[in-house]
Image 1 (spheres, helix red, strand yellow):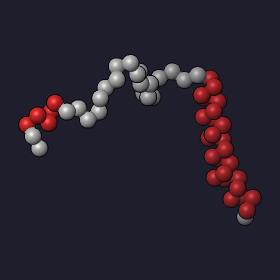
Image 2: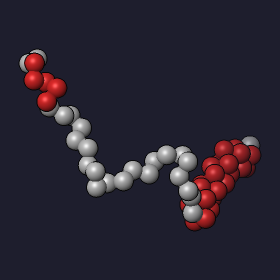
Image 3: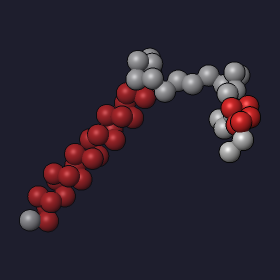
Image 4: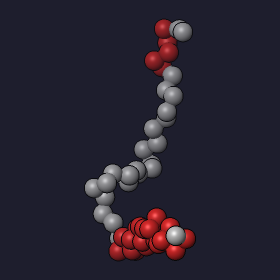
Length: 54
């Protein structure tokens, strides 16, 4: 390694892109409905399918 390794940035930062990955972000009603539908399908797969196959 050379002494000028600090000059090289491995992950360039793009100031034009805004990240919105924080869990404190506002959710739209559509996003909540999609999440609820996915949860419902998951619950059906986990509980209803084994009951039907038993």
